[in-house]
Image (tube, rainbow over all chains, first blue to last red; front, side, top):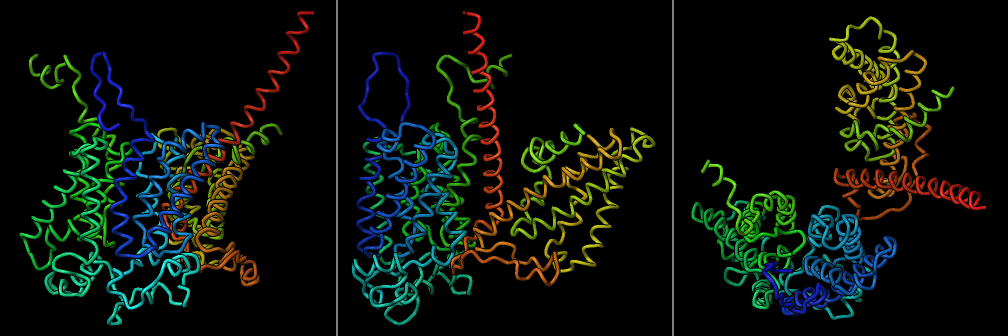
Length: 359
Length: 231
């Protein structure tokens, strides 16, 4: 899946089917999810449960209607992974119908309408995330501050109660839960930075807020590092290639660095962009989707780099605080073109341009 | 009469301007946020189609072939102006809601397409009926799409009916459900594209089902004949 090199026989079969690859990606997500649960509460786990369940059920229903081999397709874990990636992306205490609408949209519209696994042009989880973000902006931006900063502590039962009714067992709304110890509603680091910058503060002034420790938002740095470790493990296990994560992070860092050089007080530093938001998660787990990303190695470098550039551009000038989903889906559209121009040369064939010039 | 039946089937189903010819998509996608907006624009387009088809058919023998397109466009523009002024006078609120999309009916390819492909080659009665059917086919799709988007996006049907039908229609508005969180995607342009895709898919699915059924009945007949020869 990750590397399709056809050599002459004898062929070595590495015993990996789609299901095994998908399971490895799921396992690699676990450290990140654990960190997210630690900092943002049990809501994360409830969303994972809801999204995965909805994704698998929608996949099964559609495959039954399409008269396909349902058991085999569900066993390849691609629906589970799509649900999982969506669940990681949405705010932990968003209402249950957000996850249900999102996961069923990801599977039914984005994946199965285009022909099922292997045929979808766009990344299912990210397209569903964009759909949710555009349709329900209030719910989709209600991120809680890390638990250590909130005034109201909440238990697993509270989290379940909030997801299904909108209020905790004691009757606090999500809006009240977002209030920090000093009574001010808290935003995510990227959101906060963006608001502060548009209000005329400098980056350094914005960073003095309680939600940051040093240059990174509390809780966001360990999550990013956990996803980084999971992603590096995937590269080591050769489930994904290094090209996309590397070029995507490089693209983002270089772009951010250029703006940082221009004016460090109005543009956040590359490190800030790296450690906050979902750049690392996106680089290793989202953009590397084997179906909707580029299939040639050079193409992967272009694809990843362009996503990185887009992320910084949209984060800086767009309407939304984070941009991984938008950037990935934008570049998904460019994949056929990228693949066309980076087609690898078959052995023994000369480059077209070269043979033209020889004549 | 057979020609009328044929025109009816062509306009409403087989050659529907919206979901088969895919013409006039700009207003189709832009104004179908509610049933009433869709209906208003659909009726306006139908009137223009009817008028332009009749006129083009009337003058078809006098129009020099080389300059027929400018003449058709002028005829259409004339009718669009009439409709626009009428809407301005009688359904002012709706006129404001639909805004630029009323004058833009001029650029609707379905209209000039019918003028060129049908009205300029056929007698008035057929041309008029063709314009009416094509207009209805377009209107039906506008209304269905508007309904889908209105139900998903606002939870209502026929909201703003008074804009088109006058004050008595205010009670027509059906509220199916109320929600704090509106499904904004359905109201935004992407929802229009998705809904349009679903409608085209549904139409193709129905056509395939009909074709499959016809094939089945044909097969049965063929088998009966084979056994007949065997005997």
